[in-house]
Structures are given as C-alpha cells and as structure tokens.
Length: 115
Ligand SMILES: [Zn+2]
Picture 1 (cartoon, helix red, strand yellow):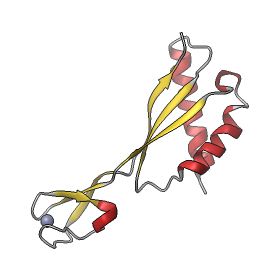
Picture 2 (cartoon, helix red, strand yellow):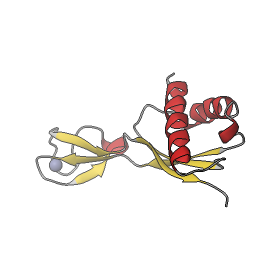
Picture 3 (tube, protein in one colour):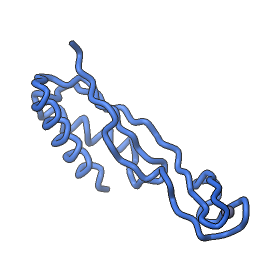
Picture 4 (cartoon, rainbow, N blue to C red):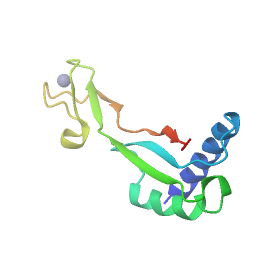
C-alpha cells in the first residue's frame, strides 16, 4: 500500500502551486487516476483525509478521482483497444507487440479554490 506516499506527493505539489498563486486555502483537488495504475481510489481517499486535515491550507479539502480508462496501442496493426478487457494481446490482429498508451497515470488535474 503506497497510497500514503502518493498523498504526500500530491500535498507537496498542491502546496507549491497554492504558494505560487498566493492561495491561502484549497477547497478541492481533482486527480486523474489511470484504470491500471496501482492506486486504489478508496485507499487514496482515506490517506488523503488523514494527511490533508493536518495541513491548515488543506483542512476539509476534498479529493476527487477521475478514473482514466486504460488503452493499449498495437504496434503490429496500429489500432487501439481497451486494456482491461483484452490484456496484452491485440483483439484486431492477435499480435502481442503492444504498448500501454494511457491508463497508468496518477496526476493532479485541477486544484479548486473558492473565490
Ligand atoms: Zn493489432
């Protein structure tokens, strides 16, 4: 379980962005979480609540997770397909020469501040 480590990265980045923009309190953070990333959104929420409430700037701040569907690109035929459904093998041509094109991300999409 490394969600807590991720939460500390998020907090560091959010505080940095808030500091640069002269923001005193952040009300919401929107995350993009890839479908095949190793993050479990429920755990992430629990860790977030625990850690964010220790930071005056983030007290009560809500964490929202956008789940990004995983897509794999086939190098053999150039088509894309849903990773979770088909895994490493291309359903179009049967090749296993495939590469994950998205779905592994864990990134901050938006920081929300009430004006
Ligand atoms: Zn293919």
